[in-house]
Amino acid sequence: MKAEYVNDPVKGPGYALLQLAGDDVPDTPETARCIIKRSSDGKTLGRGGWDQAECILPCRGIQLADEGFALSVGPEVVDNLDALEGYRLVLRCADGREAVGSLHVAGIVYSPQTGVRRVAEAPPPPEAATPQIPPQPERERNAAESETASSQGDDEDIITLENVVPHEEPKAAPLLESIPPLPVRAAGGKSKAPLAAGLILLLAVCVGAAVLKMRSGAAKDDAPLAAAPPVTVSPEATPPSAGEKALPAVPAPDKSDDTGRAGGAGAVGRARGHLAGKADPETSLILYRQLRTEENGADAAFLLVEDAAQKGVPEAMLLVAGYYDPLVAGDKGSIKSDAEEAFNWYAKAAQAGAAEAATRLAALKEHLTAEAAAGNRDAERLLKRFSR
Image (tube, rainbow, N blue to C red; front, side, top):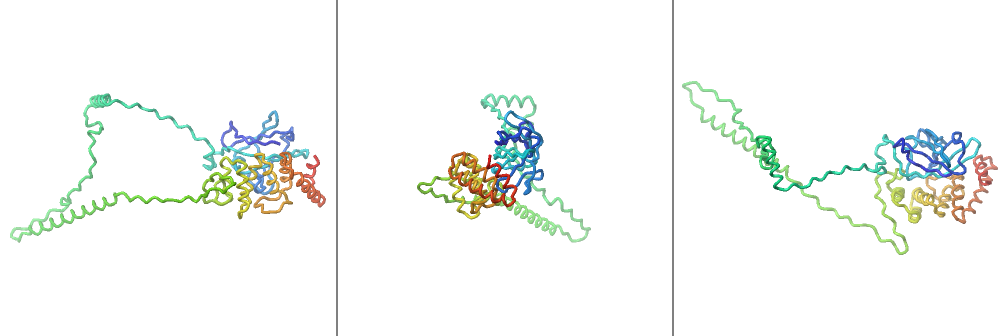
């Protein structure tokens, strides 16, 4: 079964169509149950988000086509998808048949209530072109200014470079006016006019000194700060060794953890940064081998090899199947063993020409036969697919 994600052009942001086609697609899709399983942790998507228990995908309608049909989904599905994740879509029919296909999403346009987490995926609105005003000759501009001034009357009402008065701080009113007049001494007493004059003079000197001090302090505050010396950073990149392909530049990771979205710190952040670019399969396999040797690098390596497998590389298909194969040992990170998923990838690798895929399929079939004999119903169901 072939599954493809397409944004719904009619309903707009937050809505999409899951287009399904292939020989194993049922003729009556309304009787089938649709399930989306996330490859990284095996959880399924329901109305409440990703859940460990198996959930039925919430669909808003079905559109029939010549080669299959399309499922209409809304924000409860679209807002929970990630372009850098891998997904498996399962259709279970009423007669017991089952159709399985890998769903690769790209160019998601989220609903407005999700905020700005995918602003970079939406094209920016076109900016209106600013009309260019041709320069006006000096004589014509002077004539136009003179005509405008004469039509409006007084030149003092027009703001031009000639009549703009520089701004000056208002001078402080003399504080001597606030001093009440001295009472007049009764006749016959001794005059105190010289003492009053001395006090007034002393007060005027103190006020002037205070004003000068305030102005000098304001001038110091307005002085520009000295520019900080430039910081030079020496590059730490070293040229690749002979025979090794140089990896593309990876965006600098942020401070989120390895379980976050694209750009997280650590091995997963490096993998997501690479996948956010061109991510050619050959470079992905080189970076995969490097991350597999690092501590806690199994999940990051899986993202790279899964992307290469979805692009048709047989070696990557075998590696992805090994992550799911319960018979293959090693550090698999958060990827849980899934015999059905391993069977799907081994079958694709065999069709792509990987010779080792047939040997591993035979070993997996023998393991499932033993599990079915012990009463495992999932093993019995998967063995029926081997016999087809």
